Image (cartoon, rainbow over all chains, first blue to last red; front, side, top):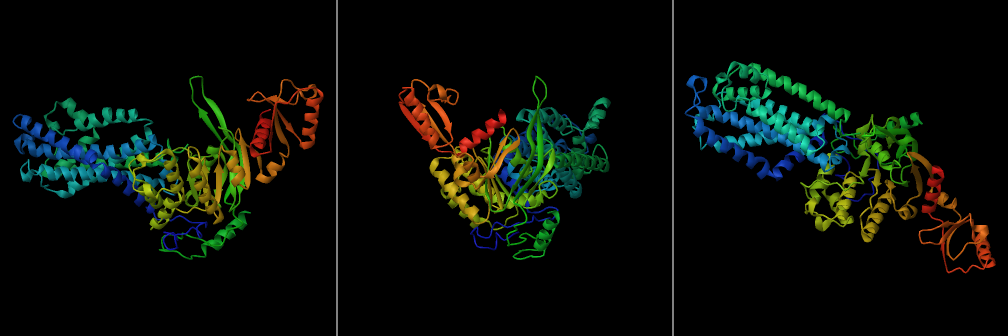
Length: 280
Length: 342
């Protein structure tokens, strides 16, 4: 972008006034997004392989133990067919959250967040880099899991009826979770705070989102509770893309996901623009 | 001033020389030195922090209407005891902290309104020894260059590594580095985008003597090539040897702002420490007991020293040991900061 690339490597011409570039997402975004991806990819065993293995274990255990006992949608589809998309989405969502939240809290605790606070990177660029990085990790885990479950389940369980819905909910869901992770990372002042967020909000909500059962089998009271859980809509909509059956209309789910995308994006951007807990 | 500045900037914008991909970014504005625009211009900056404690909230005035101007090409020192506000001032320049009032400009760019341009022109070596354990030395520098939008920085990064004696560690993980090496990587990170203004916050803390010399010769070279250098340090002899101008901060206020030479001239006296069993009565109120147990005096010159020794002889007090000291920045510093406290 400047004369550094064209001039000789001496510093003789260097003490000149410079102007920063001004596209909406400039080089600072690209670099930070690249860093966010490199960060999880360097420890892929921990960030991609481990969650995939865990989820495969869930799949093996639950499909063996429950397939005879749980009937979903009046037996229209098998339990394994029902379970696989939900498990994939659950892992995708959890990993998207884990990526942005742990990256932010680690940078804060290690105090190296200064490396991105000093350069001319805008709040929007920081937001997009963290959220897209989280989406990249979530989607990587999702694709890896989809490929690895192929040998274990009937192939038609893994071929979406309507890939557009699958893609829409994968992107929307990871956006929501990446943004929520960013907010949690900025808000947390130590690892304990983040653990509270993770164990008392993210885990219960993902587990109670109808991953392992259709909420139609629940008593009316618990059905109502499930309907205020945003994770339920992400998983339900995602599953609709695979076999065209869901607890609520995918359009309603899409509306809920869009609402949370917008709300959380506003909150996260507000935090970044005002420098909440980042700049004194 | 405001108009001149605008004119200068307007002139610059109309010189789109040496721009690669100029549709996106008018990067280098001018190769002519911009004598009108100060490298750093701080005007009436105040900042207070609230210290929350069990006894109640405590307001600390970190900076109290600080105004400073550093011209382009200067080698400038910011001195002061711990808690004087040096790091707060640097944080405001870098956009890490927001001032309660006042403005700060880097190369004419406001650090709040034109923060992107201000930051593009500034390189900061932070005081804290921070690093990202995920990356190697080279990756750290490459990432930092990319954050500033510098393309093809590898030749420059090689040169930085060479000058900071880090070439052999280029592919080592940051975790594997000693404290001094991490410090040098931080210096490198501040230089990747070749900023015209470089701020070093206590850069030699924890760096051994030989490397300190290397670091200073590198920084001196950068200064010789037109970079403005601002330095905070506890080692006053460093400021004395390197810097042409000095600002002393205490309790968030500038207590002195002058050339190093003038500050030293103001301290034209000499100091003397005398070990003896007693003190001549005429000097009893002038001296002070030093840590060594000796009596320390600050004298106006050698004439007064002669008088002092004559009085010792007249009182029949044997001088066991005597040490003389020339005026240095440390004395100026102590004098100014203690005067303020009194």
